Amino acid sequence: MRLVITEQDGGLPLPVHTSKRRLHLAERVSADGRLAADAVECLVEALTEVKEEALRWKVTEPLVFATAAVRDAVNREEIVAAVARTGLSLHVMSGVTEAELTFLAARQWIGWRAGPMALLDIGGGSLEVAFGRGGTPDFAASLPLGAGRLTRDYLDQDSVPAPELVRQVRRRVRHELRDVAARIQWERPRTAVATSRTFHQLGRLCGAAPRRKGPFVPRHLSRSDLKAALKTLVGLSAPDRAELPGISAARARQCVAGAIVAHTTMRSLDIDQVVLSPWALREGVMFAHLQRDGSLNPGSTAWRRSPN
Figure 1 (spheres, rainbow, N blue to C red):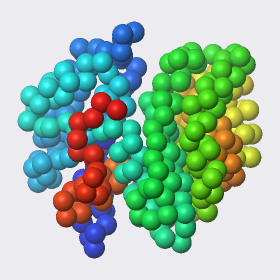
Figure 2 (figure 1 turned 120 degrees about the horizontal axis):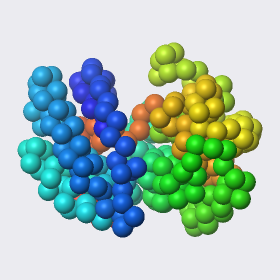
Figure 3 (figure 1 turned 60 degrees about the vertical axis):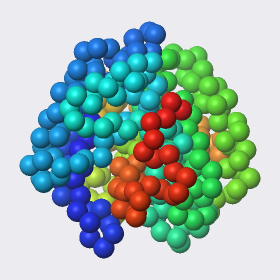
Figure 4 (figure 1 turned 180 degrees about the horizontal axis):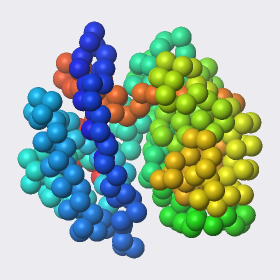
């Protein structure tokens, strides 16, 4: 869970305070798809702390949203009801809305010079892909190809992954991407932009500037460099991966799945290089809220509770 508090300056959400709490919700889902009761309580306790922290910064109505970890839970409505005890309203964001808002943020960061733009975002539970010529996407999709999800399904171990398991992950990604890949290839975007912690860690592994250099340093990730990095990652155990540049100990286990998704997606969509954007979903939510009615467009589902 991440709290981001910003102030508006000329329409731009400039961060003034951030904090983070590791909940590992995706790792606490039972075999039947339910988020465990103790995990729900942990979520409620963390939100209570966040609410108090926000109040100290004079934020009285924080925007609280959840993505795949809650969206895919069988007991989603129970989770929303439990959170309501804190006095906060938890908005469960659909995958398509997640893609729309992330595209909005990336377009704001990259600018109009990017031309027709494709957006890639790898989360823990899903992969979001979008394409658009303007400020909002003409096409958006959410696929069950998150790095955490595929790690649990195929690679949930600290040891070096078996080659057959790596091939299985690749096949699943290619299968899920067939229709999206056909659409993106037909659109032929001028620029491809990637967001998410997964892409940024892979970019750092492939030589992009570290975070301490600030957000304004240009960062890119090429498919050829990613291919070489993936070859390295699949030959290492999780503890050894954590010693590599950009790979944190918390993400060392799932970085293999993330790299497979990233490389296979770029290959399937015929993308040679992505620009790494520091703005993503949270900034997209902020930009949408700054608009007159707080939505992405008149038909937006950004603040509807959606099962999709």
